[in-house]
Image 1 (cartoon, helix red, strand yellow):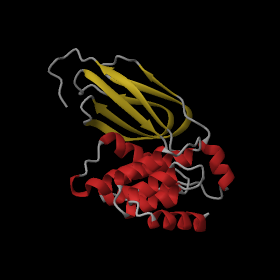
Image 2 (cartoon, helix red, strand yellow):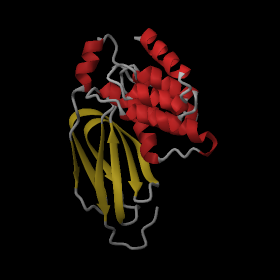
Image 3 (tube, one colour):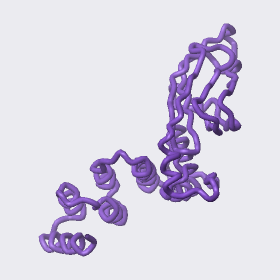
Image 4 (cartoon, one colour):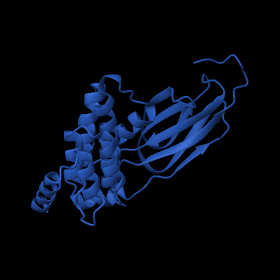
Length: 227
């Protein structure tokens, strides 16, 4: 496959096509398994918009591949903007969640997270667990109950399985108003008594890489409540 790709690219180069034209032509072909070499070619030549196009062509129901694509999209924007890169709260939680998963792609996510934030993350991978076992575990998707909603004091969170849980509460402007980790359990209480009335996104993520977003309406009786 690699020799076919190299031969194809050399033939296209002889036609004096640009790197972006070459990637687009190969990416639109019927040949499979081209994502990695084409993505690498695009990034090496700083063709960041083309790199996104390569990822657009990835069709997969596999959780690890989905996480790979999400990580690479953040990586592309980081490389593209570098000094002016803004790591928004949703992407930060997304990358953190992937980094704490147990599949191989999580390692790259941890490296990228550290490059952006200078924070080192450690994945909790059960000992003596086979690759098959980890794959089966990732198929256990947590289901959450979040109530009451609207809320003015405490959000109750219930999970279908016992686990640790990361949470992020973001307002409509993308500002993080509350974040943290909840200890391993199936039920938690999250206080919002000092959070102003408004509409928020509650982002819940576990160490399997699953993420859930719930819309929360906070209605405070005291209009003067503040953070």
